[in-house]
Length: 145
Image 1 (spheres, rainbow, N blue to C red):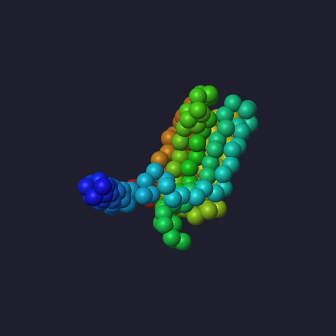
Image 2: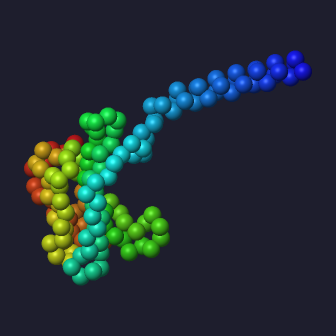
Image 3: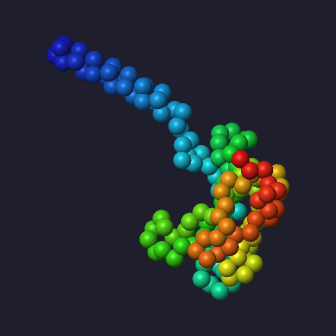
């Protein structure tokens, strides 16, 4: 019995050290893939002709009250019914607060995204699935990195 308890104790120590090592290695990745994010201003807007929808939201990520990572994303419907493929991202605006950005249909094949000139355009497509994307202020006036 004494030998059995020594083996169990030794295995417990090894398991504890392995868990500690995994925790230490995974700690820097604790917020990977939007793990600590909140979404706001979620909207789905149908195009005037009913062929497409756009889905938009403001996302704030990071620890604490300052939430250092803040961005606005716009997605366009693809027409693909398979789960996960219904929408594709067409615009990402970074460094914006809630209420500073908006998106609207100008016509059945054109949307406008408005944002402050201090924002950073992270990603924007000029035309996707036959829908033209207009940025206000124009891309040349924003601070791009």
